[in-house]
Image (cartoon, rainbow, N blue to C red; front, top):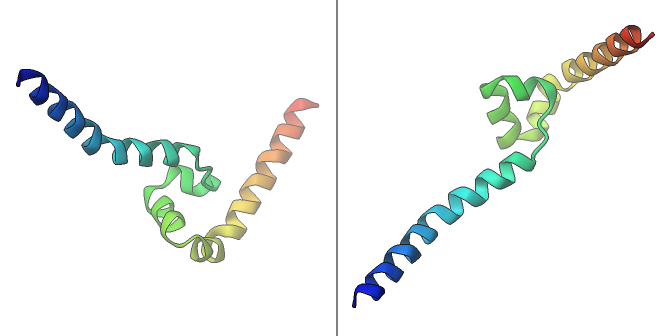
Length: 77
């Protein structure tokens, strides 16, 4: 009887934490745009509606990446 209780508890813990763990693993694999990496509000917008994020902040992200690439090119020389 004691073993059944232990098995039930273990199954309960696995079933409760499996979805949360799965979501965390999937979220780590995502590669958000530069501005969304550092801003929670922009990250949530990007996750919920990527097209809207692209319309509003896509140009700024491209300019940021371009400036970052130019800066790294200048420091390499």
